[in-house]
Length: 273
Image (cartoon, rainbow, N blue to C red; front, side, top):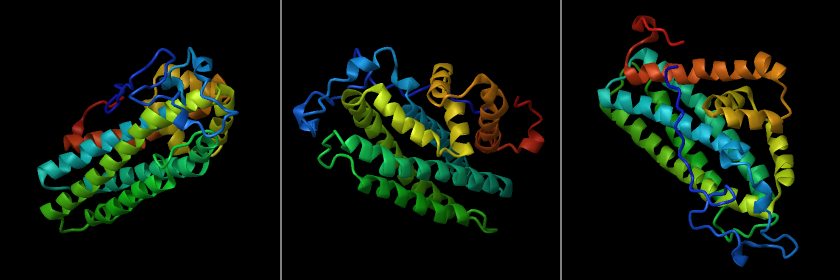
């Protein structure tokens, strides 16, 4: 299918399937409470990060960001944006913004407090980091609205591209820090059972667009683990979850692919299915 991204940015792994880019979970500085040491990693054996809900969600946002970036870069490179392209970009940005805001809200209100119960981040992860990414979302909003004007100049597109690049860089950095710090520390200080309680809490608040994005960009093993964690039957998958994935593809991925190509769907004459 057009636009489907299967490649992953693979974190470096150690023997327990945890990322290990210089973060040593066994460093005493991370431990907040002597009653909760960093000795849980072995309990995660056999379950890779790519089957972890939090990693899957971040991967889906990162992949959607890549699709959106390709489309915005394409219209910027062509020095013009047509009405149909502007409409698609506005819709896609609205969906992306909804996904990111929800993820950041859950991180700030649920995941970070959970991790801070046992982990001493010493300022390395804080609510202020979330607020910084949210500010970049607000910055792009202003410029997205401007491309619907009847007089879109090259400067208009340049301003949009620069604001989006700021957002993209800050969001990617936030996600990379989560990959390289939050996840290995979580697996060191918490058992899978303890983490699943939080995951199920997050799953219960997921909007359809979040489910669709997560499932679209996930691989088969990840989908299988997601269904297991969420207690989703194959019957539910076929009649509900699969539909949410397909709706996300139709409303976000496919339209952006045509903007990137600069060919309206109505005139392309190709089979996207």
